[in-house]
Length: 461
Image (cartoon, rainbow, N blue to C red):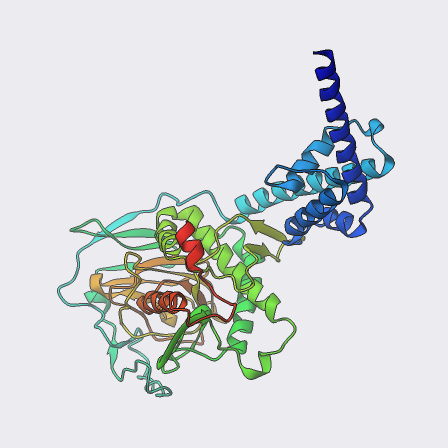
């Protein structure tokens, strides 16, 4: 027995000695020490784990833990600094500083999250509306909300492949079932089925006008300037971000390719794409916090289909650059990949085909501004749910959740009102194109090394 205990003691001493040699080797690696101190580099854990594996092999130390970095950091922190070499003490101190910094950032993220994201859906008034026998305002019409102004000329036909209407309709407010004023929130349900029709949340983001609006508005302007527009027969500007189904005559799922030629090689393109991911990431975080059951509809589609999120750079994070010190959020699901940004975009009363089981569209009005402060009904651009005769007066920092399969649209603009929104939805054509894309992957027709989906991963999960 004594010899056995002596052998065990010798083995432990040898194991400890080898571990400390590993620590000395790591602390002598300047690149490793620099990476330990890094806070924002998303590749940090991967690099540190690879280095630990390499150095451990060179000194003959075996790590069985699935996360070598976590193992080394945890074990090193348990040692009394007075019993360590100067190099090991240095590395121990670097890990301690990094941990303190991360904890501080976590507290700041929690503070920022509570400051901007709110605490959940407020107790909104509930309205029950009966479905109309005939939609009002009528389908396929551009809605004119002002009777005292002349009828504007018809929008110019730019793209023969896009929807186009030549019908105007002057709004009769007496035929509406309900008008939601610009300072009112509400939940709208079908009076017969109690199914939700629309949800309107004012003051969607906290501290919005002080910090978020300028950043978001400038980003929308920049995005519109960089990209070729969608649905060009409609007044205003609309651009797709995230993923696209490609040309109508040659469908192919992929990241949108609507950048204008002069922006194809700009050095800030990755930064711009990350800003877009961050704006929509914030939007989705607000949605998940305040109306989680809607977000769950999107999450179900994304998780079951294996689609990517709105994250072209694949950083899996979003940042808020409008605070004194930019704050990066990790571990938050990013937005669904089909996004739209719009400036003064108007759409006739229409309905959309959606991804099976997810009929919801969500838009966030980032700006509604007019020089004389005329931002109510006198400036038009109201949102209509025609199946129920519902008129929603738009306002800055408002979120509207609606069923895209019902007849809806935006009225005509007046008085030079400036109106900007971002929108999330999952369309039927996205579902169809994604399925076709997966079939091409399975047939081996796509092998360019830039795949969004891998059958091996799908099968193993």
